[in-house]
Image (tube, rainbow, N blue to C red):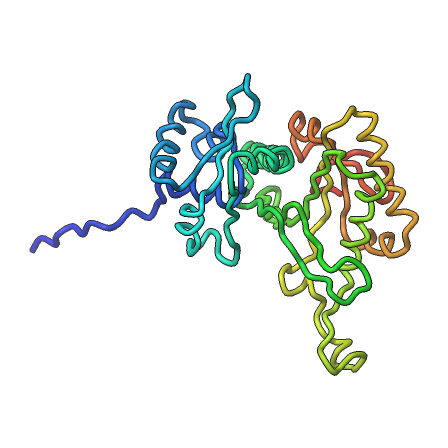
Length: 302
């Protein structure tokens, strides 16, 4: 008796599905960045065949970055955000709708600088055979700090999830801060205080402040991470001398602020320029530790 062959649905997502998920996750992506994430070994023209129908269906729109370059950056429309709202890739996150091309252009510099850093990690992971995919960089992750006497929220520019496969399998997580020198060096360094407060923060149970049970409560970060993520600052947007001074200011904050000094004893902290990150890769000796010796090293050696 011949058993009929069952036709099974394909388990792989289409390029259109993956492109829409990537745009939803990263908020804004250039055509070139999408090509590198989605189909790096295919001719560049292939990505246009994926994006064209999404634009025609009203799921994405774009802004042009620079009149001369003609580089397009793509973002979700309201219809696109509705489409991805229940997708498993984005579970627990609400897709951001950018209202217009003008609004997209205004946020492009910061967002796309972060994507450049992400692509440096992605390229490095692929060359090393590590596990790190286009969706393993999660932008704008927020944690609440309502009762610690400082800022009410910690907003990380991104959290990355990375699995090294050699010489043994190890999982890494990192909070990533993107600095384009648009804020003062002191304000940038104060981010370390906010991270240190989050590291020590225990949410207080209403009506039970100071009790033994309250003191034994898990730290807030343990609800989200098995180990506190390392902190990586990526600097761009100024001459190297300026960026070097800003890294020195981060090291000074780590040495001079008691809370941050204690924090640095438990959590690896490092800073690198975007140029070095793209040139040598994040596993190269591009990261300056913010505590201890300033000798550059790879990000997993911090």
